[in-house]
Figure 1 (cartoon, rainbow, N blue to C red):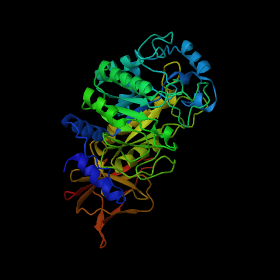
Figure 2: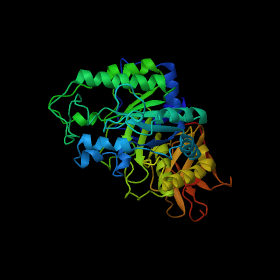
Figure 3: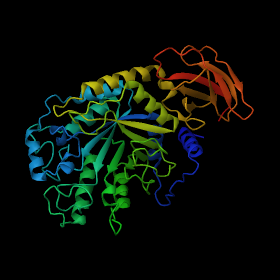
Figure 4: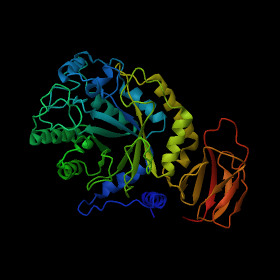
Length: 440
């Protein structure tokens, strides 16, 4: 069983009630299947929500929430000059964290394009004094430093009159009775063609916004199959994910969860069945996706590492978000978190990268990841002097990952083993015990 199938099996075991959507017509190309495996092995990516909304420092939904007209909002473009933007510094800091890919917002719901699109003047080159194609610079630097580039693309546009209005962006000053789906659909597909033609090899297209029409009395036809086919025709290896909060549709290559681990629904955006596709959960480093000046409530490094490990224990990637500042810099606190995560990854990456979901669902003490006949126990919240490990595999040996010293264990009649915990140094974020087991 290959690594991806092992991860699938682990997820199916943990979430037994979940069923995968059948995809009878879409046949992924061999290079797409390889890209799926690489994606699953990579485990960790950085999300970058950046656009002219950073100028207002109120988050990426500012145009919608504060009832500003699109005309007034668009004036921010004439003052958008991120003088400190340096793609090399961005990519270097992200690479140092141990992240293997970047997902960049090319066009969010406000309709502003962060590349030199030929489909609208409302873009980073034509509408701002900066006059530089940020996406081009980022793509070139990602290729140079060996980081995969994924592209976020919104299905919504709160500014264009041809976008058929849904339940958001209704107070931006545009006539919400106007709609021309053929025009808007053609516009999107021409933009997607640019992105997949002019910016090198793209790892994934990350769609968002289908939920804008989830309250329609008559189901809205987004014509996704044709759009997905266009993407796979232009770049067969390019993965497609859609943040629609539902079980994947035909033509999608990864399944996305927003602000929750697979199988959880604390944020009210998940709860969908777990598919057999590679999994990814996206989460914010602080509270917002886009830059918000008052939001300094950053999660601690131990919290972030714990979330990374828990995602891996479920066979899922973590896409961790940063909202860059309007001056083009990544926030200092975010950079500090990246560096500290990277230090952990340098030491423990073997227990994270190219692993599959653990043998059992998360326990109160932590979770597990597997690599061949090695089962890594990630003890995140030790309580007492021992832990119960409900693995069905036969345990042959147990050692502390850090110093390779033996760890005592005993078999349980009801299955699994009881591990006698060594003394764990104070301040340890994740104490890892490696078990040598029979092949899973």
